[in-house]
Amino acid sequence: MTDKNQEQEQPQTTAEHLVSEEELSQAEPITEEELAESLGVETEEASEDLGAMVTELQSEVARLHDELLRARAEVENIRRRSEEEVSKARKFSLKSFAESLIPVRDSLEAALAHEQQSTESYKEGTETTLRQLTQAFERNSLKEVAPAVGDVFDPNVHQAISSVSDPNHAANTIVQVLQKGYCLSERVVRPALVVVAV
Image (cartoon, rainbow, N blue to C red):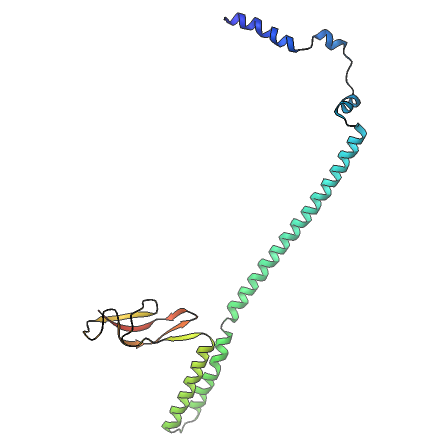
């Protein structure tokens, strides 16, 4: 089929579906009322319904906007309170531990205030002070890490200062404890210093 034939056929198909100009000129124009009636809606009712819907939607938007502002304010208040609580927790986290250590200091100062003491009373005072310090540690979850000779070396709570070849001890066991370690609530504050067998 040539281009010319296609052009001739195309207007014919389009013309079949269109209303002729003559029919169009004879037709009466459709009014808004007729259009609304054909759609099953009355114009006054439709405009009233639309007005009511707009008013309702505007009040809903205002309500949601108010809720949003309140929610933002609440989140800001929670954030501010949390920051204050964290700040107070940091500031006063050592209060309990400090209260436990004050009697220990008092005992040491009392011991130093007495110039003429026997060795026995000095030793007794030192033991009492050590008991107070131990109680303070226990109240605040500060525990000793004091491995015994022959215990297996644990790198999580022990620090090997040196290693020695010792036929009396198995490899990777503790030969000597140089200094006790301490843990605060399962967290190592200071590892125990040890010598390990290889």
